[in-house]
Image (cartoon, rainbow, N blue to C red):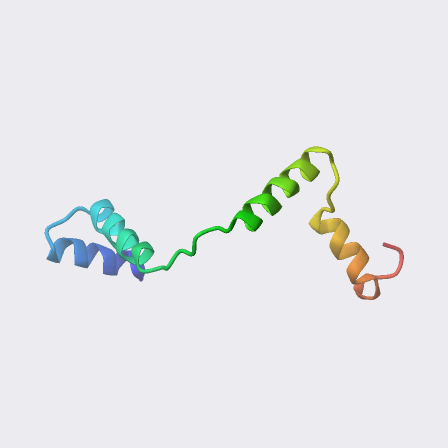
Length: 76
């Protein structure tokens, strides 16, 4: 199990488990490239936030209901 592997690695490196896990997370996350956000993307997020505050949005439940009515059992 993963827990056992972490415990063995922590013991081998003379670290406590939380310290080892934090370091693993740092190494993993540092390896993920992050693209800068464009001004158009920021503007779109702000528009979306305003629409949500005004109640101008569709919930996932509503979307599923409208997109795939043929998949629902009869009577729903």
